[in-house]
Length: 225
Image 1 (cartoon, rainbow, N blue to C red):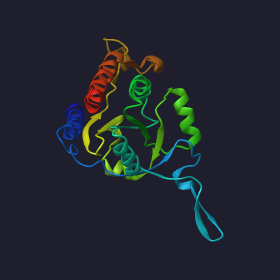
Image 2: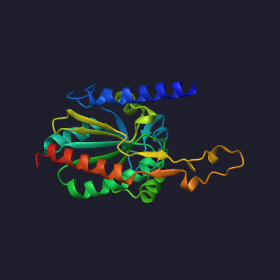
Image 3: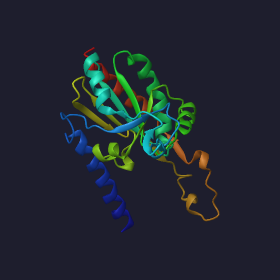
């Protein structure tokens, strides 16, 4: 019964992912959303304060639609990478590899690493240093999750957008990490067995490398190289 339930859960996630590749958003205008850039030290809930009876902003909010206007003016495609601080270890092994593509295409493509986690500017800087990550980070409000129909299991969630603001492709979870059993004899099931958390996960660097190649190839198509 448990196996059947797990299978159904997997199939529902798989079906959800394929729906995007089959065209749920493809060819449509990229939805707008609100965000803060990484220089703002405050949480979205903290940027407003009252002064002389009026609400004042501590930081300037960024509208994605303004980024798209800039992209159209400059004739550049946009790559948005939605991610979350809590998505470990997958995201934390994948995002640093994206630095290579950022260095290669940053003059021809607008890169954005849009954080969905509730984080302050200080936490963002700490995460960028830990990864490390060169791509500019923005912190999205809840409208990004709602407008792009992002589920927790989807990140990293990559959106490829043409210079005219149309979504050309969406790629979900380009990093692959799987749990590795302690051995083949079922010893991991023993109650007195201590799980070594350091070796609990095996990182599929080969799959990550293939994902980077695929993303590289698609960016070349977007910029007509």
